[in-house]
Amino acid sequence: LERSGLQQLGRVIASQRNILCFAGLMLLLAYGYEIFNFSLRIDSEWYGAHYGAKPAWLAEGRWGMYFFSYWLLPDSVMPMVPALIAVLGLAVSGLLWLASMYKRESVQAYFALAVIICCPIYYFVVYFTILGFGVGVAFALIGLANYLVFKKCWRWAWLIIVCYTVAM
Image (cartoon, rainbow, N blue to C red):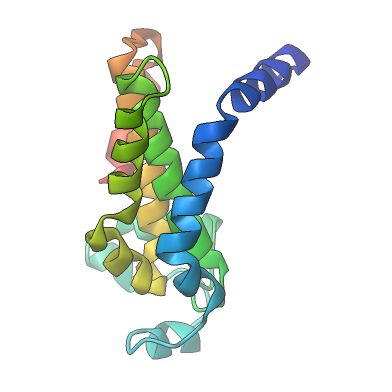
């Protein structure tokens, strides 16, 4: 990003600080235990013993997870990082969804964000540390693609297609 792009991003963040603080509070309330606590799950033993991207994921059709684990997080059995990536991806997705649906901050926007972040099925996704970070990245990609579609940014159609394809 060039300097003016970073300045514009800074202005957008400053203008949305209330909803960003609310999102952070919801993340801590809903997922604080998962982020700051580490316990091995039953599937973590196998993944912890074999470092790096798992070729078996390609055979299972999980090519997105294979590439995420190859480029982003080769060892997903570790404290904090996978859960943090998962919940940040969820928050980015929710904030992009709100930005595409609501023109200004409102009680409805805050309520919608709380429902998006605190949905129990997402807690289940974050619980499995070996896949949770990939799902968080997929949430963020889907949020970005949906935002571009709702805002009718058709010149970015290639990015929309890439985001939807990788997220699947």
